[in-house]
Image 1: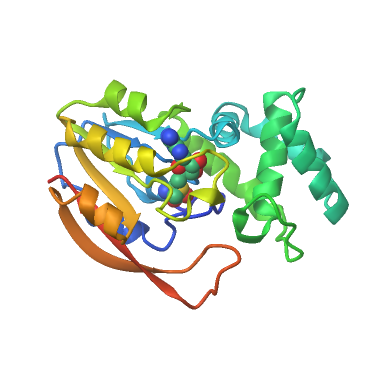
Image 2: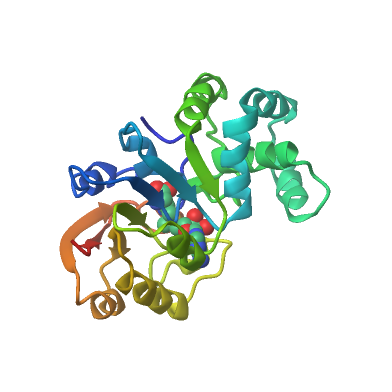
Length: 251
Ligand SMILES: C[S@@+](CC[C@H](N)C(=O)[O-])C[C@H]1O[C@@H](n2cnc3c(N)ncnc32)[C@H](O)[C@@H]1O
């Protein structure tokens, strides 16, 4: 199935290729470390008895996934209260930055902003916003898919250490080198290096997607690296350009 939202750097285009790298068996737990919109998680088949984890350090994202999972109907009702206009879009941006909203109010505003913004950035108002009817019908399916998925909001390092064991498969899609500023969570060169050093020590297997840049080649020289590319989907950059990417594996 497809995700219910777009996300900057979301793996909508690459999800099938990434899935083709999954091991055929022996995965007791699947952990999506940099969850975003969860395009790979939603494209992946559910496997009986396999634990699944969705994680993102962005608290609005983790809250949204939790509200869809536990309070789908109430979230839809909350969405119905939100009016659609350019002026209110920026009111909602301001409300998200202030304290005082309930989890459901926060989730509804965040979902509204992601749905009605250019490139799903939640920052710029998109005039060609689609009807909410499709989302209304689709959200219960997402709720059902998330029923057994553990939703976490942690930095990648403690998360990986918590779930690592020999039958774990981690899928990691960190902010790309040079594109870190698209996300509200800070990520810098020290974090790229920290990620490589954590992954070097794990017992489980991992699949990692990244832009193809020298730092990534330097950090993952000890892994299997597969070349691929992606059509640009970042707001504010030419849309017909392709970017070289890599899929990196420790198996
Ligand atoms: C490239 S996006 C993931 C896109 C996702 N694969 C999809 O298909 O939508 C990277 C995500 O990493 C999250 N992130 C940034 N720093 C993080 C950290 N230290 N630990 C966990 N998640 C982090 C960001 O909030 C962002 O949602």
